[in-house]
Image 1 (tube, rainbow, N blue to C red):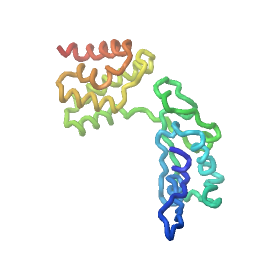
Image 2: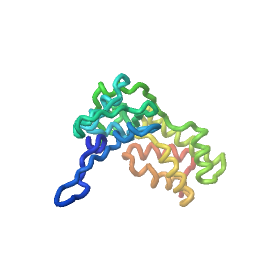
Image 3: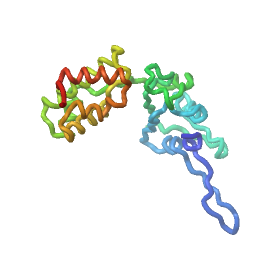
Image 4: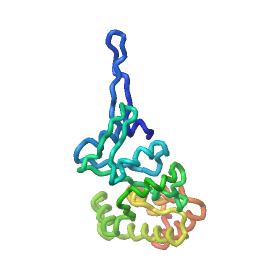
Length: 218
């Protein structure tokens, strides 16, 4: 995402009698600020370039909430009072302290971080919600779903203790269970689903966890 994608730009729309016709087209941020009842969601916000990121300074400021369109004759756009700007990211904008999201993420300007009025740290779904997700997605029993969720939570605790370098996500859980339903072998399904992309040390530790629950697929 570059500045013009957020703010807008002049585009050539055609010509009349050999005269170019230019038209201003609002960017995503400009459009979202104007349209009542809009949630402007900046997904993977911590991958923004500094040039694009600074566009958000004034719109995020509670006492300002405006966007100055220098490119469009200094037009001023006001954030509609019904609207909100929300950002989601795998880091808190101050760099990746886990080592899992270094590629592509950037340290964001602290003055912009300071303009977000509320910050929420999100964890994985609760055990009960993940169990219900597997039940509804794969039409499996409560007991079977619970077993797989318990194992994934053991992986996550191992990651928190520093025994595994990467976590196992809800996406990994669904992928693993899907492959298990196809292959009928939980350890093999886990290898194809998420273990094979781990480091050698993590693969050994992960297989040991699985063998405590399933023995061997052989």
